[in-house]
Each structure stands twice: as structure tokens, then as C-alpha cells.
Image 1 (cartoon, rainbow, N blue to C red):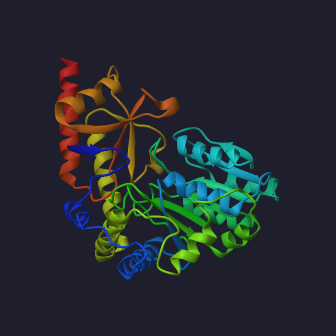
Image 2 (cartoon, one colour):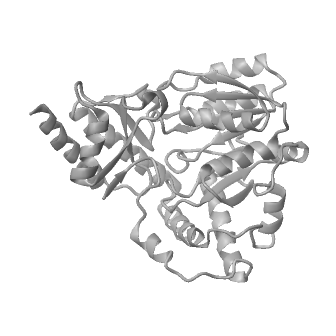
Image 3 (cartoon, rainbow, N blue to C red):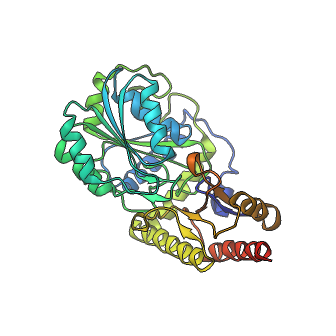
Amino acid sequence: MNLRIPGPVTIPQEILDVMDHQMIDHRGPQFAAIQARVVKNLQTCFQTKNDVLLFTSSGTGGLESAIVNTLSPGDPVLAFVAGEFGERIAAIAATYGSNVTKIKFENGQGIDPDRVAQELKNAPQTKAVLVTHNETSTGIMHPLKEISHAVRANSDAVLIVDGVSSMLTADAQVDNWGIDVMVSASQKAWACPPGVAIVSISDRAWKAHANAKMPRFYFDWTETKKWLEKGQTPFTPAVSVYYALDLALERILEEGLPNVFARHAHIAALTREQAKQLGFRMFGDERYASNAVTALYAPDGVDTEALRKAAREEYDLIIGGGQGPMRGKIIRIGHLGWVKEQEIYDCFAAIGHILEKVAA
């Protein structure tokens, strides 16, 4: 199977193999050593000295933890939205009672840092800013460095970033850019199974946490940090995913972060090149094309859902479809994790064969 969706991603065999290890005592020294290595290596990957907490959940759970640990009901929040996942984090904040103002950008466009700065000047009481770094629903990677600088220059609000699908696919300097909460998840570019959310937390976020009044239990940062310092987790962790993350992080750091970023950029460029050769058009502004997923308009007359169905049934090629208002209008090709050039060539060879049949 050629799994070309924005996650979960194909897992290298050696990482699959390490998950075959027997369970261990998650309150014992062996697990404590694994967790300590994982956290230390994640700090390196996040380019941060901040605390990194792990939750056995999806990435959405990590985002929920960011909201409930830094805010109180009624707090004013600015959410910069340009796709389905920007909508999701805004919805989480609103569900818990935040006073959310959504600043919407057209799907396929990048979030404008100047607009971020202006909106913050207009709303000086803002307690938190919500941004999705990589919008997998549109194939757009927003200019996070410039957005972060705009936030820090104009506000002391907590900057919460959905980096679920962006981490490792492009540079994201958590400390240097002033990102307060960065969330990722194991099933994306880390190339592990789903099951662990990763959350980095700055001093500013911890100060907000001290005053936050939203209800929380499973995702309570104070409780989670207390158990982390004992080498444990408050609740039963996904032990097998920890095995996978431990090895995956070792391999990532052996490769080196600059090389990991460059590899993702190269595969993304190859994907766009192959797509254009078959007559696909980029969805959205190519200046902000994602290194994690490419969103494409099909050639005229091609039904995207029929294309996806044929790819799955005839070639065992799994490609993503559009979400929300883009459903039925675009396809999405995932290329995050340890993706080989040949997987991209095979993907578009299969798509090319399908298009030939359609044309016939």
C-alpha cells in the first residue's frame, strides 16, 4: 500500500519492530528512562528548553490541553483561521467558554502577519492567540516565524500553535520565535503510530496556567508535570508508542534537524513537480505550499472522488480528499515522515494511468 494521506503515515519497519517488545511497568525505572530520553530528544526537535509534556491522546487532545490550561471562561481570544484545523482549535476554545474572535482568511491563502499585528493592536486585552502552522485541509504552511514575531511585538498574549502536522517538516524555533504552546502528535512526521500528543509549554504559558479556571482533569498540566518528574504519567500511557517514539527520535537526531527539514522540502517540491506534469493545479498560494501535504485541483473533467476510489481499488494508493468546503473539489497528497522519492513517483504513475483511462 502507498499511503499518501496527511497522517497517519507509513512507519519504517524498524520502528514497527520495536513495538513488538513486551509491556513493562509504567511505574518502573525502565519506563522512566524511556520517557526521559523521549522528552529530552523532543526538546531538541522543538528547539526549546521549555517543559515538554506527553499525553496519550490524539493531537486534538493536545490542543484541548492548551486551551483548558491557559484560559478561563470569558477570556478574549483571537483565532486566525484559514482552514478546517484553524476552525477546530477555535471551536475548542469556544466550547470551553472563551470569547473567541475569528479572523478568517480565504482557504488557500497564507495568514498575513501584518493583519495579525493590527488585530492585536485593536484588541489589547487578548489573552491567547490561536494559529495553525500547517493547514492540512488546504496544503498551506503559514509563515509562523513572521506571525510569531507579530504577536510578540504587539501582545503578551499566550501564543498557542497547532504544529500537529508541521513539526519536523519545516523549521519551527519554539524558543527563538516566542511560541508559548506548541502541539504535535506521534502519527505525523515523527512516523510513529497515533496515540501520543506532544505539548511544549513556555514560562508565559505556565503563568497563564496558574490563573486559568477552565475545567480539566485528564489534561491537567500541573498533575502531568508532577508525575513526569517522578518518571511516570498520571494515567496509563501508550507504552508501545513510547517505544516507537524513542527509536524514531534517535533516528531523527542522527539525521540532523536541518537535513530532516531539507528532505521534507525536497519531497514536497518533487510532489508539486509530478502533479503539474499531469495537469494538476495547486490549490492556493504556492508561496505558502506545505512541506507536509500538497492540495491539488484535478484536471478539467476529472471527478476527484472517482479518482481516489480508482487509486484505492486498482493501485492500493490511498490519497486524501478535500475537507469542509473543499470536499469533492481537491485531492491531497501527504508527504510527511520518511517518504522516499520512489513512493512519489509510484503515486503519480498510478494517477497518470487513471487519467489515461478517464481520457479514453
